[in-house]
Image 1: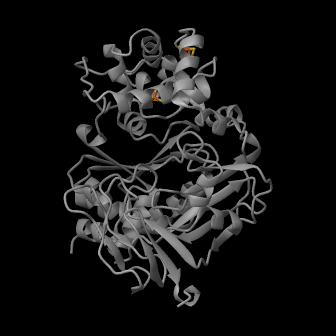
Image 2 (image 1 turned 30 degrees about the vertical axis):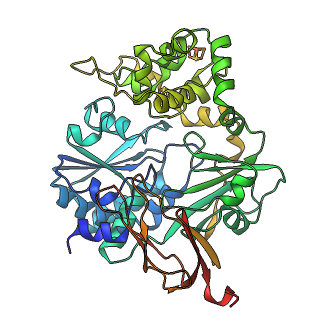
Image 3 (image 1 turned 120 degrees about the vertical axis):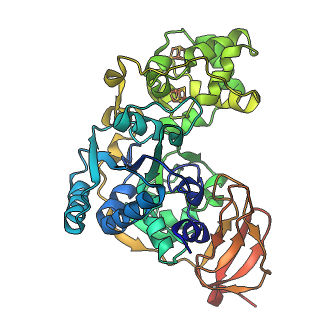
Length: 445
Ligand code: SF4
Ligand code: SF4
């Protein structure tokens, strides 16, 4: 079995993004392999942990992937300030004589880890609007995905996740949990919340998923989750994301002063893409059929416009999401050649200032306790933890499974991936959304 087949068999997906199947991403030829070790969202610490603890495994996977895609250049992009992680990587690079792996050290700004921004920073090539890095000869992959790919080559499927649990918890730490572990069990493993009325951000504060109330009770860890941030229910990020679209639209119509700061700071606009959110906001007020609204499709939803740039507290990002769902017609670029904005370098958002703006600076630099492997008795494993169609379940309720056994198979030709059991357990519930497993000694017969 070759590396692509092994990665497909193990059910590896992009560990930090939308869950694109890794066997599809790596099945190509490209001049560059760029490794994303930027971990650019405020507060996150899991990728840094992986770079420290599993530098050898990640670098071994890089060599295998680079060989598979025929990469002539291998660039490991991370931040200058991650000195411990850089030392771990340099040590292995020297020991193993990985002379062709170049470290590319970046300043601390957001969104340094966005694929298209990384491509531009490293190669000065601009990915076309709505396109992917492969169109300019680049594959970008992150450290968590590479760690899972290393394991896949050793015939170990994706069954566990490392997750940073921080913010308003008694014992902030990195935990290792089986996929399908409830978010509440993760918070309990970090000593429980320090406050009663809390909300949860799964992922980073800029692009993660915000949970309140019963949403927290239902949520479980999937292949793409790497962080749980517990915050007060009235935190700025939570309040901004829980507004209804009607409220957002009305507010935009009443309060947008057309200052264009949302555009001036937009990282897609700054690499030359035809995206000007202030024009979308204007059209929202006057003409919901305007041609400019198609530009919403090339918004990467980084959140800079709504959580940093707009002085009026408006949400161009959520307006773009609204139009992305509404307009089905494809965006067609009118530009022959893309050119980055001359002021781009001066408009990068320093992560520290960004964290303060989000009212999260008190959790910055929280020291995380030693990694804890959490022993859970029950998991709820979603059949869709990736971008494509749900995996297809074909076992019986009541069946006993071993950790690592195939639970649901990738649906053919639909960007689907395999899903494996994350516990030695019995299947106690199945529906078209998830499979519930209970450790055998917990099942009441
Ligand atoms: S979320 Fe806002 S800043 Fe980010 S790409 Fe979209 S329009 Fe630009
Ligand atoms: S930054 Fe805010 S007020 Fe200014 S144009 Fe954009 S949405 Fe309107």
